Image (cartoon, rainbow, N blue to C red; front, top):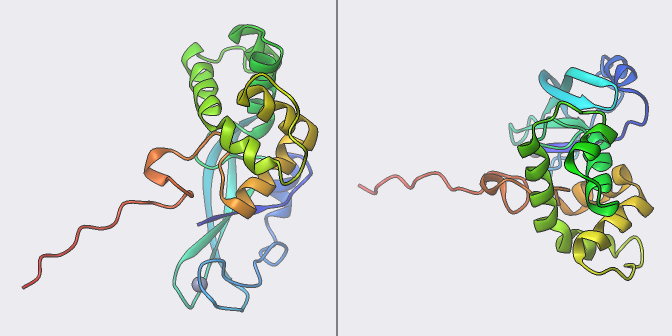
Length: 201
Ligand SMILES: [Zn+2]
């Protein structure tokens, strides 16, 4: 299970801060009732493209000794299951959908000028599908503005609240993904398919 790790500095600072296992150690398990600190359980690496960053980052993992499940601490500037950070996605979508500029201009604004056209289209489609849910969820934080459609409404709300603050609220509180969970993880970011039932003897 992924939970968010609140971190406001640069990605370089994040990598330094991560070396200390105690610094962000969860004091209880989010997956079972165990009320004791989790045990450090190494790292995994993932790729990340963000404003002025294109490389890999380490993600710290903890283990709950009661339920034997791991918890990974995702920095809040990264989106689960997406290589691109919130900074890039936010600039791209706001430029394309709020300002109505071309995909190429939006990619340049997000400083990913070499981005394939299909990737931009894919983000736009996912965001549009998710916009009504986002508007409804973010209404807990800010009054919904008058807007011609849910896409503009959600974008205006994200811009007002701040994309990372919104992501923190949506993901940590409601397990809503900014761009919607991929189908195999719907509805809340956990693998939905049940293991096959063994035939009874
Ligand atoms: Zn547990």
